Length: 359
Image 1 (cartoon, rainbow, N blue to C red):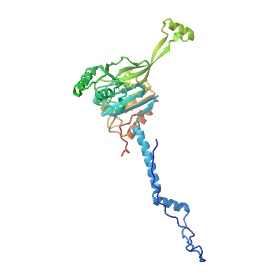
Image 2 (tube, rainbow, N blue to C red):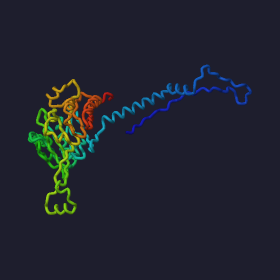
Image 3 (cartoon, one colour):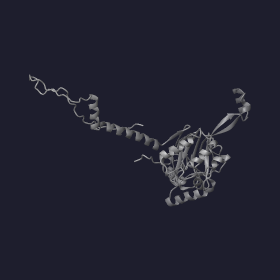
Image 4 (cartoon, one colour):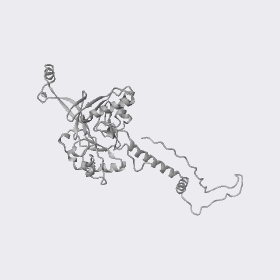
């Protein structure tokens, strides 16, 4: 980060000369000699002069300002690099959640439709609470306004009809076209996003019907019985119509949305818990809202994640959906407790949260 600062040069007081002539050069009078009773070192005079001029104060203020800007840059940075993915987004509990992965051209939940989500072709809705789905009509309409292709929007089957009714209502109210491909994708079903990428929902535990999503990379691996064959032999079998490869799915990113800690104990969540990156919630961080309170509202307390951390096998964890009552520093302090319990790199998504030192 580059930061610029302007320091106005102060006017330095003149340093008295030890030997000063008070006569004209041609005068034959002896020069007057000024004797200092308590002579100071030149360094002492310079330091006192600098202090009295405010020069050191200006430098100190500039350094503090630079450090503050560095801290703020950490708070408002727009992307988090995890396992090769530049994950962006905003997730404040009860206000807005939208997490974007540009590499997959997808967004998880839409929040209030942040501008940078509009360019994503795929949208995965976890549940129907407004802080996760409220911006859906705007997302669809804005893509149409910019002549972009209709998005593919994935929803739990239980809310598909309600979403269709919602979009139709906006069509009538605004007298506009709202084009989308709405897909009801159930837990355990698989949808191909592109040749090397598929998605599957998994069950989550919120106060209304909800589901998370795992995105898998797809690759072909030579079957074990053909590993010993040479290249020409393998090619020969392939041309003869023999299937020589297996399809291997590798979980890349998992997103839970809002959920209680029950998903951590569900065997069907195994792929989510071994994906390269797990994006999950940690709404509550302290004793003011305990585990019982979190479970009652279908959320997780960070202490529950710590308790069940032995099941987490991800390379990286992005924590989201913190309550708006917390400041950035409180979030980071709580995250260190989890980091000590897991081998995964733990990162909090703090965009949208205020620092204790914010103006």
